Each structure stands twice: as structure tokens, then as C-alpha cells.
Image (cartoon, rainbow, N blue to C red; front, side, top):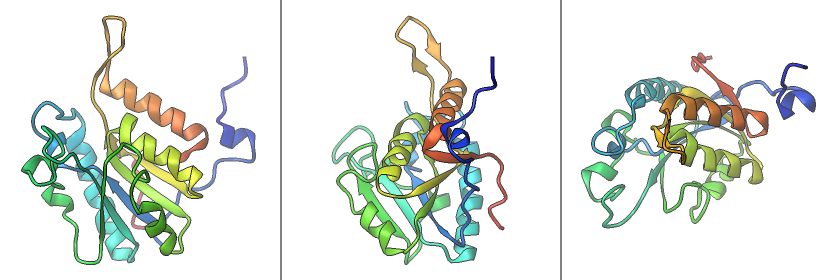
Length: 198
């Protein structure tokens, strides 16, 4: 049996990862609700630490930066007027950085993200965010439809355990790995421990 290959590999090769000289940084849903309470992610702190480094590198390079925040007005989770719905202090947006609130997992749906990214003149995005299987996946898949090539830093994403529908559990790490494998087939270049300062 032949070694499995991605569609990228079968159709010309996997593109190189993007860099901050040519791409925009998109930070998805780094909100307090993922770091305390029922949605606390087991690898959330590690993902946040990685994203902090990426944000610093993007700022140093002068790259366009987009902070995405899920918003459910008056909801038990992701209420932007409450502490849980706010972006974590470590990634707090600065003046000149775009903040986009979204109502759905796909950050392009019902928002101005597509137009704002196009306005940068860059056709590549670098993604970090929460959760891997949900908003990171939905946004990355939609990015292809909008004409963007996505690079994902695996270590700056995280998810949670889910029921498998058969009485068992799919662990957060298994779900994270499987979702990134699916995205790397055609939707994104997935990197781990990438040096974002170059």
C-alpha cells in the first residue's frame, strides 16, 4: 500500500508557509470563556503562549492583524459585554488592529472579514485560534472560497474532548490532530513550532 499523500502533494506540491511580510495574521476567538468555566480547553494555555509570540512577530513585521471574537448577545457564553466574551488580555488588540465580531463559526459569514482582508492587498493569511475543529476549521475552509491561502500554526490552536456518539470520547488531542490533517489535505499549510520572526 502506497504512503498516503495530501491533495496538495498529488497536484503539484504543498506551498511553503506564509510569512508576515506577505500575509495577514488572523487570531480567532481567544476569549476568556475558553480559559475558565465549562469551555476551558486542556491545551488552551499552550496555544495562547504560542499565539502571543506570533502576535509579537506580526507587530514587529508591520503585518495586518485581525482579532476575531465570537459574539452571542446576552448568552451564557461569548457575551461580548461580559468578561467571558472579551479577548484575553495577553492578546488585547492595539490601536490600528481590526476587531471583527462574528455570529457563526465561519469568521467570514455575516462579517466584513473578507473585504477587510482583500483591502490589505495580501492573499495569504496566517491563522491561530480556538477551537481547532470548530471556528478555525470553518474559517479556514471558507478562506479558500474567498481566494485566500491559509497557513495554520498547529501549536497556536486547541480544542476540547467531544462525545463520539457511541458512548465514548474523542480526546481533544485526537480531535485536534484529525482536524488539522483534514485541513492540510487541501485547505491549509499546517506548521508546528514555526519560527515566525523570519
